[in-house]
Length: 407
Image (cartoon, rainbow, N blue to C red; front, side, top):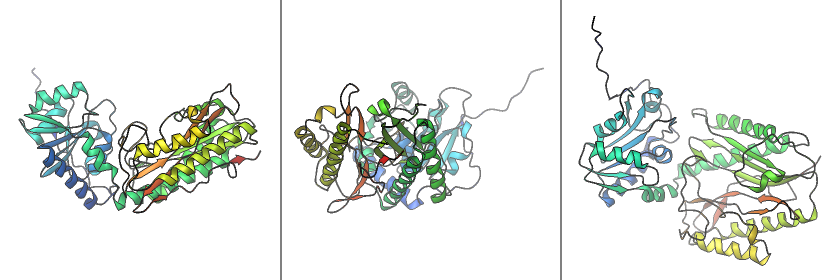
């Protein structure tokens, strides 16, 4: 007997249920898409095929979970369509602004066939040169047969640098949540507890606070890096099971994630007591932090600010302990996606600060283990550039007067 199977589609629409509340109202996404369409017109692109988590979330509200599968947002002059994998069922439709097409995985290439159903072939296609892999770029050429391609990554990054009023409101809320995590961490610090235990206390407090503030959101990705002793030497060192001891230098780092938006609080602390050498380095880094924040104002360039802080540290014979730039932009980003790399406080970036940008000040000094005052010292505040200066939206205090934890 011959088996007969119904034809399986390459892609289909599975609009299961009603649209869910997104991080922002529809009007916010319409304004962002209008900005993208201006970019298309200026570059000559007829359609944008965006594949990064940050750009898809920025223009549609949908934050995907790749898990080995590609995702996209296709934007044309008159449509905006997310392209998602069948494993997600109706969730991408519910959590995106605009249309959604689901592709099936019964044959390779269905992702690009779904995209082609929106773009057609022979068009000028905009893509993200800092995200699309060579392998997927070959697939774009094969399935879409573009007349030409245009890299949109720099233009979309510049659009994301300038925050709307709604974004600033969410970022302020995120900074307050980071402070909540900071206080929970402070309360959990004592000799004998593991870094892991302290980190979990901060994470749990932040997730509870995010759910209170944003009851309609999806919750994921909030985390804490809490380091002690030698583990403080790097800004991104993971949590361990090391137990805290009296006299330890500590690094508190809270990272609430709200609908793809990252905020952060980072502080140096000491447990019990601070030796004289460590206190000197800590106070110098706090002074650099305050000096750096005073430089954040419209019209200043990232490079100018960086050189000024370099000079401040060099005068104190500490510049050799600097390990990275002094701050970066905020918005849709995480430790595994996104980054408005054009707005970082480094010598090689000449971006001019403008009102509505959001940037951190976070000087860090790392003193090697064989020297007095060994450890990593870092303070981190988030500031919104205003018309005549900057608004600091971080509330948790910094410095020795506040962050020596009694035992």
